[in-house]
Length: 66
Image (cartoon, rainbow, N blue to C red; front, side, top):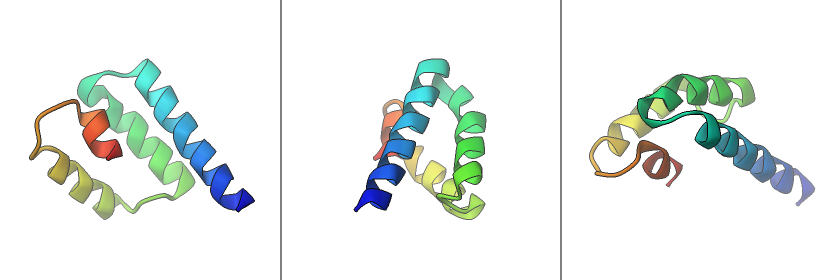
């Protein structure tokens, strides 16, 4: 349970940092850096997620988080 909480806190802090410092497509380099640093997704999974996000209107950060 504690490990899950730690992971959720890391994800929250990563999205908070990105959300406060980037806008629009400028989040992509920071997001890729964070994901590779923590090993949350592979490069292929991230690219597939970004491709799906482009199908829907709205801010990329909210769609990608979902």
